[in-house]
Amino acid sequence: MVAYNPDSMLGENIRALLAEVARLIVVDNGSEPSKRSLIAALAATHDFDVIWNKENAGLAAALNTGIRRALSSEDYDWIATFDQDSKVSAGFSEAMLAAYESCPFRDKIALIGPHHVLSSERLAESLAQGDSSQLFQEIPVTLQSGSLFSASALKNGDLFDESFFIDYVDFEFCLRLRKRGFRIIEATRAPLYHRVGAPTTHTFFNKTCMVFNHSPVRRYYAARNRLRVYARYLFSDPRWIGHDAWSWCKEIIKLILFEEDRLKKLAYMVKGAWHALSKRTGVYAR
Image (tube, rainbow, N blue to C red):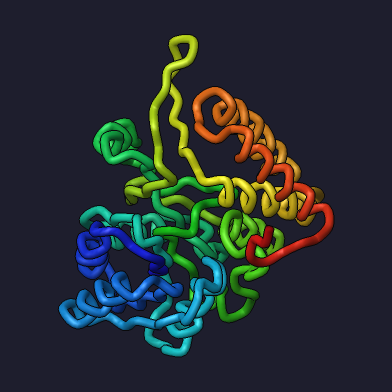
């Protein structure tokens, strides 16, 4: 689990997770002192490992730090990664592994994603609508939080691309796995509540939509890294890129209609696009 200035929900999320995993490693990505004290107190109470980064090295680098620590042990076949604001459901690991066991192409699976639920209110509804007879479905990409990575696939390939810093870190990794011949599935009966941004709900022409209200800097990273992914995988995965580009268009429309600081966010997106074209990577710089 990667932590960076976590809120009060961290303890609850960690306690839920400890019931589902054999070992927990938290990578603190340069949190302020008061937040580090919170993590240290939780670690002392609940007995998990903490790696203290001196500064925010980015999500990709923090994930790689934790993965390398986990890979140093030969005890684990699967390594899961989590954001600090994701919460597992009871029986999460059992459902994830049941999806794997039910899959006829297990030898090709490098990654098992959970069923991401972006709103806690929609969790029961999402489960009720699910097909209980279908334990998995094949998918092109998934968010890294809550995903199970095959330790053998991680050992034999590159880890997350640290030049992305944050945003599209997981999608780039998924597309890279697929390009190498691996396959990705979603465990349809393993819900993970995952908070994205600061979501608000709006109605437009009698249709309800959710807006995530990301900061201008996050808009910069998403635009820059999105275009970098498009350039890198245009010929190997054009269908997914076309689908994602259409989603981006709809996202921009919702930003213009409903979000605050529209002009600033759009300006940061333009800058991110320019940096993608000029091959600027790493941490955002003015």
